[in-house]
Length: 551
Image 1: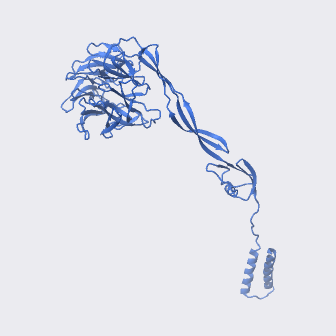
Image 2: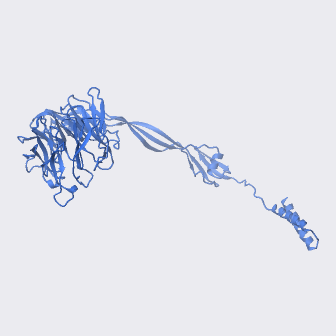
Image 3: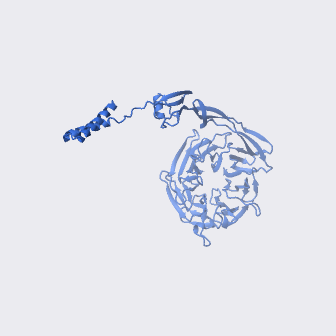
């Protein structure tokens, strides 16, 4: 048909021009019609593209089946649709779905499955050895039987075409905590047994210990080795011990760096009571309410010093019968002024109505006469001490027995060309809480002199403090225990004797009758009589710290 149309067009055009050549006369309208008709016939002579009927042959591999497929699909995605194949959410395709199909190509569908599998494993217990000065050297005693724990491990298993390609741990859950086997071994040296007024508690190898009535009568109050040493104080009547511990293994260190506890010191195997307070930076017993505790908190930080202080103050009261703990806020969290991120130091007055506070550059008091509306009053201010590192110096605080004076360490004026914040002068001072009196009692005592007032029922008391052996380099200096009268007179260095190893910075504690002082020397607990100056070593494990003395 196409050939005939082309011949007709050619004959028309040829005839037209032939007639014209031979002089045949035609009108213009006829010529236009002939030309248009010829053009249309010539266009219809052009070849027409017809759909291709050629298919490609590919090999389709899926579900452990291989088959050859002849298809007109353009790409892999079209092929899968044309074949009516369903894909799972994790299935993989090789090559990718947008790949154009070519003859001889392999198209593979990999079926991917994911499943969770639980497995329980036994967690072996660890063995812990606790040195006990109450047992002779060479003797041992099983303090706690070890029991294994149980842990559930959840695995994430990935299978491809039914074959396991990966197995990874998704989570671990402790179903039952293991209990350490604790063996007590004797380390008792041949020290003379001395009487102890009241009870003297201390930390050894991360556990709380207590001596009552005699240095030969001692027992552990905890056995898990978890005390962190930040908070450790006997109540005034020695019935309870307040202490802080490291968080348990299930607690994320990003959530808590310690926890606050109390334990009854009288019953054997007493269970500790959690006070539901975490991240505690300071805590102390009320001087009068034996079931009341004041504390201040912070929050964990990955950077030094490891916390961000809240600069708050709270009181926790617990019930002996049902162990219920009630918390009351005295000071709301605040920035805390200069170097407030490090925190504040507090000290509860003997009258239990006032609490002294110290910051890096000031000292003041909090009046609790109206607990619902406490009054905060600043007593003095001074230049902070520039440590040039990640710790902040906060002055130590102690009260006079009548609750009218605060004994502390003051940052003195520079003696050379240094700036006030670089001054190396630190003095033991006394402040009247009514603002009428402030005096230096011991000049150049040192940054860690940490004065402590002796307990007494009258106005005649002494002040024990540590005197720096190198007062102008007191940050790294060794110290000597000294005693003075309440007005700073009659200063007397009592321990250790000249030529012996100096004391390290620490907090010392008075006996309830104000006649002896307990301290740490060479890692062991010592007692020094402030009248006779006779000293006695009470432990020998070289791992002792934090003495606390109660009635």
